[in-house]
Image (tube, rainbow, N blue to C red):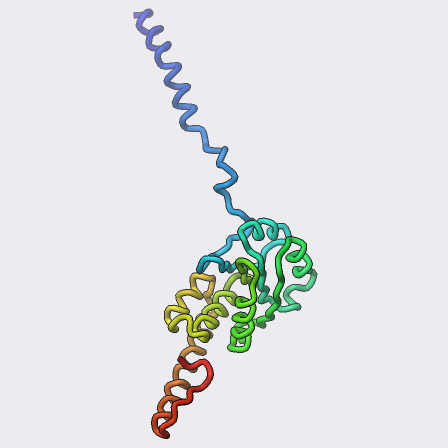
Length: 201
């Protein structure tokens, strides 16, 4: 009986050691599988990123993702104490400032400025605000106004870029624009003209 117990113990010790090894936490995750930057970057389409406010230590990792142009939608008052233009340029990227003052700043003029910035961008583009909400909203408006997407598709695009609270504002602007275009089209038909207002498809 004692011989059987000793034999069983000798068999069990290697098994317990193997189990202990198998249940150890996976502490050695390769660095390549971790995020490239400390801040989460959304990518609504290839080469276009959106985000909340990056930290001063994030820029090199953002640049390593292929970003060559950073568009900051925050106002100078929000950025007080930060010298983001200096940080971005020191990391080797182009810096563009389009101050969007709250929800009301998501408008056609700023959408035009964003379109121009995207057109003249070097490399991939990061558009950021404080949380991604204004970035997503202005990107949605820019896509719809440029004729790149129909309104519902542009809104979905904006949501994928971080739009949350600005959606009602963007939807209202798009509906107002559609109504204006329908009225202009009706007037043109009545008078036999064909001219359409700017931003009408």
